Length: 289
Ligand SMILES: NC(=O)c1ccc[n+]([C@@H]2O[C@H](COP(=O)([O-])OP(=O)(O)OC[C@H]3O[C@@H](n4cnc5c(N)ncnc54)[C@H](OP(=O)(O)O)[C@@H]3O)[C@@H](O)[C@H]2O)c1
Image 1: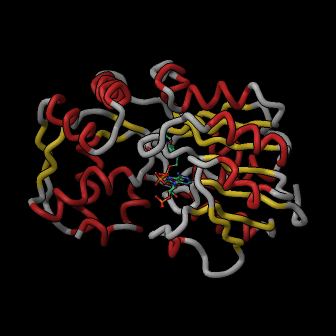
Image 2 (image 1 turned 180 degrees about the vertical axis):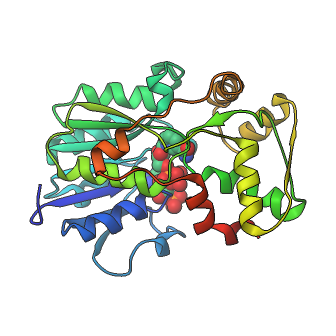
């Protein structure tokens, strides 16, 4: 796939999507983004160089104009806000139009924590495998941006993060690095049929992540472990499917004993090491002030 080809990014205004759009434009690929009508986060996309199409994964036919003439599709599924009922029809449309699909999946599938009956990443992987598309799955660890979601409000309000499993050690990955791997898979032929387990370069406990943020914003921050049940209620209240939320908490509990996997896949694919958590936090330090 070269400069005369076309890629569509679905889930374009989240954490990963805008990075993918920017990088595809930089590679000279004709770049399309699928947005929900009136997407409040449309401003995250570059003002020029991307063709905007409106559509909704809940309404598969609404994707057809965006799919007309595409070569490759980056698929991200908003599992917490949309069930997977329409996924088979969405994939049938993608298969009829594109040759290649890259799906942002999860390390949970790789380690066997996520099962297909969760109707989440493992289920989508199974559906995609059954198509005739050249697929690549990015089985990614947690994004560095999760730190903003998990810690920023508490840091700003009190300087104390109250959450379970501070000793859970994760190999979080910068969203821009997920995007860089996705762009290679969308534009190169050699990653078809691969499940890429992609992680950041290091393992840090949640307590260490918060300490790094404190150093960067010049404030002493602390961590207070709370029971997992409280967090489970909050996660379910925020829209997490209950089975997925309790699976995630079990995984965090396991990570207090056994740190998360670190792979060299990002560097192998994009030719440079992935960014550290400190680099991410320095870039977004203002979000914690
Ligand atoms: N966060 C992690 O640690 C992690 C780890 C492993 C895998 N993943 C996977 O990574 C993927 C990308 O995550 P992210 O953080 O970049 O995404 P995100 O911030 O959750 O954004 C989801 C995107 O999908 C769009 N969207 C929502 N409902 C839609 C619909 N019905 N039709 C079309 N588009 C819709 C959203 O639009 P709006 O802006 O309008 O809402 C947004 O652009 C996710 O699918 C997740 O499964 C995440």
